[in-house]
Amino acid sequence: MDAKSKDNLQARKDLQEMNIKPDLHPQKKANGKYYFPPTLYNMSKEEKQQFCKVLRDIKVPDGYSSNISTCVNVGQAKISGLKSHDCHILMQQLMPLALRGLLPDEVTSVLFDLCGYFRELNAKVLHMNELEKLEDRIIMTLCRIEMIFPPGFFTIMVHLVLHLATEAKIGGPICYRSMYFVKRYLGDLKSNVRNKARPEGCIAESVLSKEAMHFCSTFLDGFQTLSNRLLRNDDNEESLGCSTRHASTLFPQSRKPLGKPSSYVLRGLAEVQAHRYVLFNCSDVDPYLRAHAEEIIEKDIGCRASHRDVEKIQNEKFHQWFRGHLERENGIHGVKDDIRWLARVRLMLQKGDVTYYGRIIDIIELNYSGNFSVVLFKCEWVDVLSKRGIKKDKYGYTLVNFSHLIHTGEKIIHEPYIFSNQADQVFYAEDKENPGWSIVMKMKPRDVYATGCDEWEDDVENEPFHVTHLGDMFNNANVRHQWARTDIEGTTVDASDAVDASGNGLNDQS
Image (tube, rainbow, N blue to C red; front, side, top):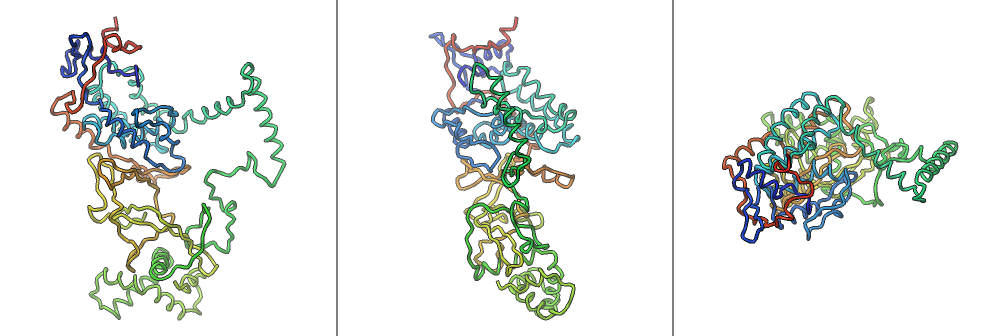
């Protein structure tokens, strides 16, 4: 921002008076102007435009933030008009993403560490032992920041960052003490002002009329009011209008569809793959899978069969064997009706320690003879089994390449389908440094809260970059003891315009 920088003439003279960072001392020219050598955190115009371009092009999920692209001017390399929540999202999530590769490692490692500190503090679940680690970590982070930025940057507001983790230990999660809802309510009250000469009267009349209408609406049925208004993403069984006839005890229930559905018949490999995935991921079918595997070993390929051979045969023949097996045992009691209907049909995913990344290309609802339905996501999966489709950068980000896919559905052994409850929501940001690659950004969906210790591991995985090695990155990059960049031009300023309006600096404090 113009006239808002802490890197001014007074700050450079502070460095000269303290006899530190000689590479950054101001150089007076013959015309009376001063030349500022570029610091490690200075960016060229092209780098600023690249930073703004990442923010402009990023697509985020519903409820994640406002449309930040409307606040970005790539040509002028400026960002303006951000709301307070947008600033939080920018600091915690998007700034590390946009800064990748633009600044030296000693700067990016410190900024990434600071962003990770704020992000962990704003988590919905806080653990005391992690807060104690944050208290120790922020001390080192601020010390590293002092090694890079000028002394005038460190005001009382920067120092207060040191006490945020301690405050969270006393007051609890920050998200429950935020002022966002208060600001929204104040904005709603201000919107009711029609006579600017009497704003209090306008607000009082508006609140009184709303409360009166809300009170009267509690005695009326049949239409939507403030007391029974549906949520933004409403998946209530009552609001869905799902009949119990289509409800299954074996699979997750269907959710509210968006858009106009279309009906078609699955044929060929798509039919086999979708129905087989439903069978293989139903716990009530596991005994039949084991029985089929034992039959394969005994009759077809012998006792020395490998697990891969058994799996291959089951992929091809189990759905047919399952149908015939239950037809032969038709009179046996104790078999669920849903299992029988499964057999009569003609027809993010995680295995072991491997996490699969993909994107939804279709949502399919399988109708089992009108008795119940099962919703599947059809996805295209990145090749996570080789380095062609997935890799990690030096900051810990996961990068995927959708040019290299697996389980495309072209072979019978492919599995392009998953249940909706087997996927975790992520979004992808285009990597400007590596064309064709996308950066994986993990997050928790809106209105999802952890209710127990079982989700603690998921909270850790939601960290978009790993801060454990950022200190080592800073130390390795700081070995050269160079405080100025040599790949960009410095700044020439007039002495009368160099000092900002605040006058911060050691030379002013007397």
